[in-house]
Image 1 (tube, rainbow, N blue to C red):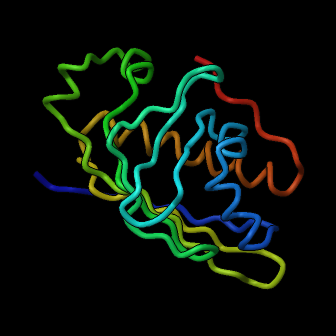
Image 2 (cartoon, helix red, strand yellow):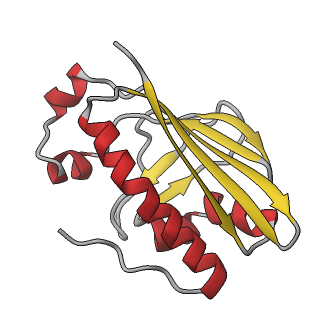
Length: 160
């Protein structure tokens, strides 16, 4: 099967250090992403996810692939949390048939008082539900991240 990727670039009025913190601090990711990620952000370490405010962090198979603070962060994407499967009307059996083997990479490039953030989500099947969900979701996540770093407020999370 052919593989495809999603790429977005945005410019944020922030320092590379501020952006790195926004990508790696669980309390920060919760505010603009609606989920929290926890890791020591060293290559080979797990990336755990918390999908409800009072829930535990779960190891769903995501692993840090590259970590160069303030410049590049890449991790594999593990299985979807059960809450996300339910949201999209899928079951654990559906997921077992289509394991997720994609990667998410953030490249951070300083540009004076701003940073250029390039997101590449690779290894997706172009005709999959995952591809469509990420293609729609990433612009919302990145817009909320940008807004939070520049104004201190987030965009409202979309409701269905």
